[in-house]
Length: 131
Image (cartoon, rainbow, N blue to C red; front, side):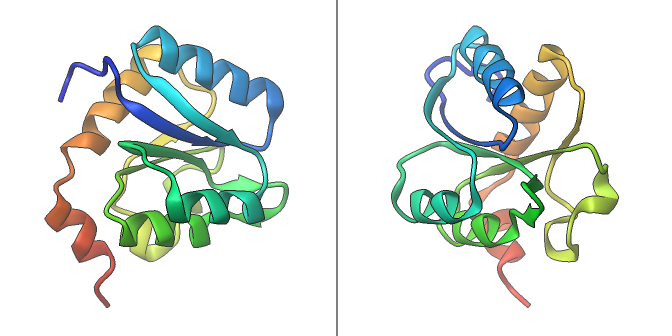
C-alpha cells in the first residue's frame, strides 16, 4: 500500500518534541494519528483496544522497553514500525525482522518504512507470535 491517505496510526513516543514531529510527518503523508502515548503502562492499555491500521513504537520509553506493547499489537495482528536511536540491534529477537526507522529520520524514510510495515501480511505477523 503506497497510498497512506487515511491510515490510522498509534504513536508511542516518550519525547514530546519527537512525538510532535512524527505526528506532523504522518499527517503530511495523509495519515490520521488516532492517539499518541508517552508511557509504557498507558501504551499497554491503549494497545489492547485501539482501532488502528498500524502502530509506530519508540523502542525505549523513559528507560522501559516497548516490547510488551509490541506483543499485544502483534497478537492483534496490527502492523508495527519501530523507531529507535539504537538501530536494529536494539530489537529483541522475535521482533528483529520488523521494520525499523533509525532516529533521526526524514519524512521520506518514514513513508518508505510505513509502506514496508503495511506490506507485512497477517501470516507474517502471526508467525512472529509463534515460538
